[in-house]
Image: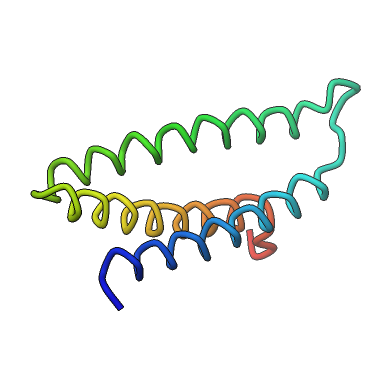
Length: 99
Protein backbone atom coordinates (compact mmCIF):
# COMPACT_ATOMS: atom_id res chain seq x y z
CA UNK A 1 0.00 0.00 0.00
CA UNK A 2 1.38 3.43 -0.81
CA UNK A 3 2.35 6.04 1.75
CA UNK A 4 -0.49 8.40 0.90
CA UNK A 5 -3.15 5.74 1.40
CA UNK A 6 -1.61 4.66 4.69
CA UNK A 7 -1.54 8.26 5.90
CA UNK A 8 -5.16 8.73 4.83
CA UNK A 9 -6.19 5.58 6.70
CA UNK A 10 -4.35 6.76 9.84
CA UNK A 11 -6.04 10.14 9.64
CA UNK A 12 -9.50 8.66 9.06
CA UNK A 13 -9.12 6.40 12.10
CA UNK A 14 -7.73 9.22 14.26
CA UNK A 15 -10.49 11.60 13.18
CA UNK A 16 -13.14 9.02 14.02
CA UNK A 17 -11.56 8.45 17.44
CA UNK A 18 -11.36 12.21 18.04
CA UNK A 19 -15.04 12.65 17.22
CA UNK A 20 -16.03 9.84 19.58
CA UNK A 21 -13.86 11.26 22.37
CA UNK A 22 -15.10 14.82 21.80
CA UNK A 23 -18.76 13.79 21.84
CA UNK A 24 -18.27 11.68 24.98
CA UNK A 25 -16.62 14.60 26.78
CA UNK A 26 -19.18 17.10 25.55
CA UNK A 27 -22.04 14.95 26.83
CA UNK A 28 -20.33 14.44 30.19
CA UNK A 29 -19.90 18.14 30.94
CA UNK A 30 -22.46 19.42 33.42
CA UNK A 31 -23.77 22.87 32.70
CA UNK A 32 -21.87 25.29 34.91
CA UNK A 33 -24.39 28.05 34.51
CA UNK A 34 -27.55 28.55 32.57
CA UNK A 35 -25.43 29.44 29.52
CA UNK A 36 -23.57 26.08 29.68
CA UNK A 37 -20.20 27.84 29.60
CA UNK A 38 -17.97 24.76 29.86
CA UNK A 39 -19.62 23.25 26.82
CA UNK A 40 -19.49 26.47 24.82
CA UNK A 41 -15.82 26.90 25.69
CA UNK A 42 -15.01 23.37 24.52
CA UNK A 43 -16.99 23.80 21.30
CA UNK A 44 -15.21 27.08 20.53
CA UNK A 45 -11.80 25.63 21.34
CA UNK A 46 -12.41 22.59 19.18
CA UNK A 47 -13.54 24.65 16.20
CA UNK A 48 -10.45 26.84 16.46
CA UNK A 49 -8.22 23.79 16.91
CA UNK A 50 -9.55 22.30 13.64
CA UNK A 51 -8.63 25.52 11.82
CA UNK A 52 -5.16 25.38 13.38
CA UNK A 53 -4.68 21.71 12.45
CA UNK A 54 -5.70 22.27 8.85
CA UNK A 55 -3.49 25.34 8.42
CA UNK A 56 -0.50 23.82 10.20
CA UNK A 57 -0.65 20.62 8.18
CA UNK A 58 -1.06 22.49 4.91
CA UNK A 59 2.14 24.32 5.82
CA UNK A 60 3.90 21.06 6.65
CA UNK A 61 2.86 19.66 3.29
CA UNK A 62 4.16 22.70 1.44
CA UNK A 63 7.48 22.81 3.26
CA UNK A 64 8.15 19.08 3.42
CA UNK A 65 6.37 17.65 0.43
CA UNK A 66 8.16 18.56 -2.76
CA UNK A 67 5.93 17.37 -5.59
CA UNK A 68 2.16 17.58 -5.31
CA UNK A 69 1.60 13.91 -4.39
CA UNK A 70 4.08 14.11 -1.51
CA UNK A 71 2.66 17.41 -0.26
CA UNK A 72 -0.65 15.66 0.20
CA UNK A 73 0.95 12.69 1.94
CA UNK A 74 2.87 14.89 4.35
CA UNK A 75 -0.23 16.99 5.05
CA UNK A 76 -2.40 13.96 5.79
CA UNK A 77 0.28 12.32 7.94
CA UNK A 78 0.52 15.59 9.89
CA UNK A 79 -3.26 15.65 10.32
CA UNK A 80 -3.18 12.12 11.72
CA UNK A 81 -0.37 12.93 14.16
CA UNK A 82 -1.86 16.19 15.38
CA UNK A 83 -5.30 14.60 15.74
CA UNK A 84 -3.89 11.79 17.89
CA UNK A 85 -2.17 14.42 20.04
CA UNK A 86 -5.47 16.31 20.39
CA UNK A 87 -7.20 13.17 21.62
CA UNK A 88 -4.54 12.82 24.33
CA UNK A 89 -4.96 16.50 25.26
CA UNK A 90 -8.72 16.23 25.62
CA UNK A 91 -8.51 13.03 27.65
CA UNK A 92 -5.89 14.57 29.96
CA UNK A 93 -7.91 17.74 30.38
CA UNK A 94 -11.34 16.22 30.94
CA UNK A 95 -11.06 12.53 31.73
CA UNK A 96 -7.73 11.92 33.47
CA UNK A 97 -8.71 11.24 37.07
CA UNK A 98 -5.13 11.16 38.30
CA UNK A 99 -5.04 14.98 38.50
